[in-house]
Image (cartoon, rainbow over all chains, first blue to last red; front, top):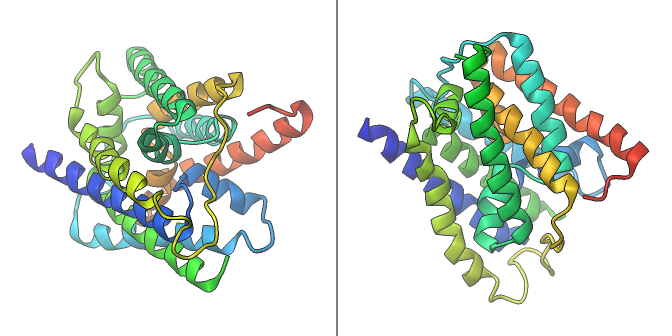
Length: 141
Length: 144
């Protein structure tokens, strides 16, 4: 039980460290939806760092997966089509809304950006309502 | 971007991926439990955003005292301040998808390393969603 809080805290500190290094080295916001979206519309000289960032994400996951048995535990009961709809909404919504949990939630809040504060409160509230409704409907359990 | 910038980006992605996979954000049931405040609320993931903002709130201010980043001649930071309808609608759509699937973009990509089908289905759909927005944006010229 307490372990989960410790893991969450350590993970949070590492994420804070990584976005700080991105700012210190490259002067950029670490917004994952934006970084990925940039790969889908490649521009000369602006694509390689994005791909390498994603490779880094994958390597980090690969390493933790070797040591932490429940790192990718997936105990959600929902249909694959539910997951397709969820993915479409996340992809469309994060680009329309200029960011996700990392760009708005971590970097934007730390910068005290008004847009990011509004976006973060909005997507948290929408997520809370969605879980409440879809649980009640039995779409996810 | 130079070789050094690209290498820096790889290192940042790696540490970010370690953090995500350790934190619990790559476990969709935990994410849904975190959002389930009217049910069996699991607040532990508060420490992920709490920990990361705690660090970056201070490092942001320290780093911005410099004239430029270490490996670039200028800052590349967002400058928009206006809260637009697209920002709100996009955040709502994202939030609904996040609650429905239990994945946001970073954890979904990192979870591909479980080599199981569900993160893969989610990530492919997410990329399709991003492309769909591009088509929508071409028609509607969305002011973001």
